[in-house]
Image 1: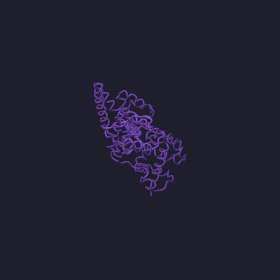
Image 2: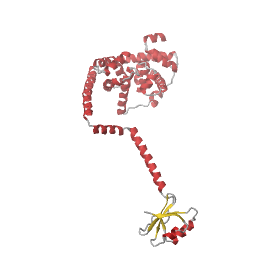
Image 3: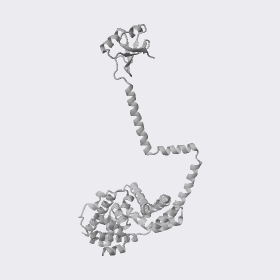
Image 4: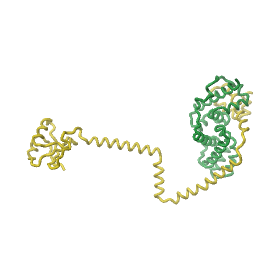
Length: 199
Length: 176
């Protein structure tokens, strides 16, 4: 059977052939296509048609759907603004995209908070960190930049002072000083750049 | 075929007569397609009914970007796939027995025996039968099939190639 004859007999052949030419333009394939169409046609003719009941079933389903639809619409209309807002929010938050977005935002907030909190912590702690007796005077101090570590230690020991917090911010330390100590003398020791009451 | 699109437009306006017409014109075609996939008359009839209920409900959403029959068959296909999911009967085309044996030479003469060919088509996996049905019986272009099955055009071509090869092998094995 020639291709022209096939195309006349089966208009679909033209469409299928276009595709086939992209793959392989062989005549054999075109013949196969023709036989395939015939086989499908015969198979379709051989099937027993769905019963009339099916269409009735479909129509009944449609009637039910239509009866339910106005009820749903009426329910929506009678809802108050709060209920509608709640419904809207529920719809919004049930969206997977938004849920993942919120998860991401939360993760960012946690990471940010962690970094901020950690940045406030002193980079090191003294041995006396947190040992506030509660009955002595407490002062914020900043040591002069050129002061050596050893000088600071002997200064603290000499005046029976201890660092109870710090360094905070710009190298600020919180020290505890016995009540009876001469504050003016400590201030003028030449070691401190700043000294002020801590509250 | 433009008549079908016109019928859908009327259905979108709740025209029952148009719906009955559409059903009468297309039900055999759609039913044949579904039956080819599910191989069970009762299930195919259920899916057919569901399909036309969806057509009624979704007619207003039909924008005419595809042919009406493509749209209806697409709905039927989705419902058939849901059925497969429920029954967990998904088949993997790659490890289907059809491809294991035989050679892939051209056997156009095998196709000439229509009864054998029909038997072969019945034995094909649903994916292979479906692609041959859509490409060679419904006459959909590769582009249309690609959209309907949500797969790339090249995959459609490959699947057609494998389906034909599998069919040839089946026919060849049956002759032996």
